[in-house]
Image (tube, rainbow, N blue to C red; front, side):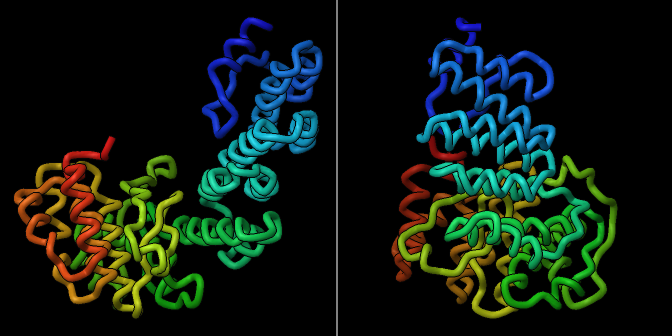
Length: 338
């Protein structure tokens, strides 16, 4: 036992980890009792973190609390709550996962993302109810972040992969729900339509229907691309996991941005011409549409991409120039910068 835990602790540093794995099989409470028998304090800490994660798989909150309470204050206690919150979320125990995430210290943001996107597709609570739950379980600014994540996930579950892109519900969404609703509807509409234009036309009609996708396959392409200077001040909405998009200044602009992002999300393979789909918006008069299109254009290969970016290097908009400079420096259309 000692040799195994020593190797694990030498390999890990405090922080969100892939997971320890040396505890014996059995009920979480029995695992925790094994930790109490460990004579070396640092090894006992790692053991308790893993016991908390194992307990989370079963929704055993009492054992989680006992395990994390026995970990001294500091990075490892935060890690204990992070691991528990993450695993509770993945197991569909969203309510309890938020309470653990709220105790995860510097890892709270990571925990929120993982927990929120583990919300089961059959959870019928409204986006407002889930957002209220997040603020209740995680007081302060991080609770606001959690509310946005859960609201986005609730709309995602309503549309993405279901085979039904009826826009009526999304068209009726207002306030904090409007942008997340358009995002989710757009992802499914583009998937079913196969194009921006057909999906855009469906927004004002009865929508689109088609084959559903198994829950475990309801994923797509997304990036957590850093904001360029000046972009951080623009309004954003969560799109998928910890990614976000700009919110348009009008409903029509916001729908276009959502559809552009949906085309990117549904771009499964980075083929030689996949970036070409976004070139049509690079000269759009609406800045947020241009920023969105350029983010996606620069991330995928297409014929003449370097020449087009070079031609934009003297654009009067400093945000466009910043994107172009970064793209040319790292040749981002060839793959994610190392």
